[in-house]
Image (spheres, rainbow, N blue to C red):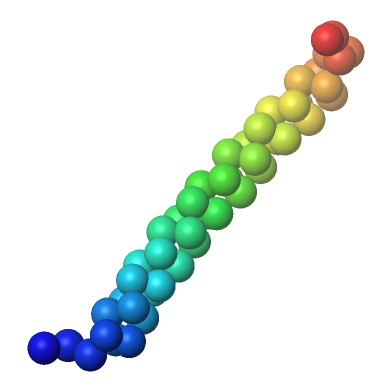
Length: 48
């Protein structure tokens, strides 16, 4: 039988890994979006 705090630590560790993956994906999408917006604004005037 595994101690309770060890399983809790594993759950927190899995959650932390998931959070890191989400953060990485969010940052990548945000960077690519700002990069595309920068390209669009530099190539042609901004139109909203």
